[in-house]
Image 1 (tube, rainbow, N blue to C red):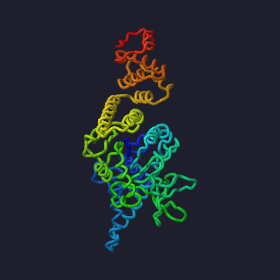
Image 2 (image 1 turned 90 degrees about the vertical axis):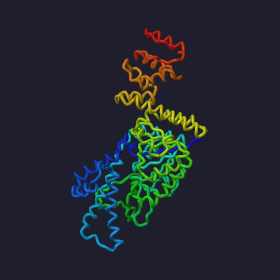
Image 3 (image 1 turned 60 degrees about the horizontal axis):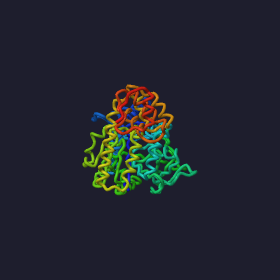
Length: 439
């Protein structure tokens, strides 16, 4: 049986209301201009010299400045002359943590429960790993909404507001949050790790979240912080990631650009037995990122498109793979990726309304599908025609099949299919007083 792992990045959370890194940066700079204008000169100076700054770049430069104080202390020197800038850097980082937590907690809860839960069901059904570099809680919220258990290295939720780190990933969906989370905290003195029920955005950098009388600090890092990634829990999470990839044969990367050197290098080391599927709008341009383009397959979909148009196909692929050997697996995965890439090209010219109709035909209830089919007309988009044809040919609900055939007849010039039509449907077509060639 082929083991599956998913790696999620910012693009996977974007459809549910979480900004991308560039948008995060722009919104944070707007926040500084509006509410913390005394920090603006430093924030702007930190991002000089790069054409397209984003949040990760800002944090990297900010941490480099904050490290100066520690370096001076090692040399036995004071921070005379730059002390104010160092203090301002500490203040700015506090505001940034606060902004990150607040923004990540403002996701579209209804959309997460309506759509992301479908992805979570598939993950649970196929016992897949979920790795993510995102700080948000979307996976946890979706899993909880449908009663699917997950383990993220902390104790299971209980009546207590906090759960301690235990490093276990043996229950339900194995969720490895490789860069931390908005609701992960560390006691500053004891370095005890806690998961809280949500992230807490404090009103100022001067405030501290406390556990009893002890201060907590957020546990969120970025891949450029080499020192931080060697500390607990990140070093252990990276080891878990590496070990899990020894089991995985199909690795699906959704909305993650693989900018993190640690993660990308780990994947490259495992490529001899991996098939990798890149799912993001620019996936075709990134097939060489893992040095094995023959085993790297590109689907130019966003996360929402993949859920709407590709999830059922992916479920069928996993069931078909079964115990196939690695060569057959690669052939089937390549065919799957090519099929969805073609669908992506077909749907790129669709209107938002047409995409909504296509998603409804693939995923909604019988009643909703019938409503969409009734609205079809002679100018149906080719991608819609292809899906309606599939509904007409697929054994199942007779009302759906009849409505699908009616819709195809209305789409003038459309050839229904090359096979033989069952008599009752042929009679139905004749009653429409139209001419349709049935081979």
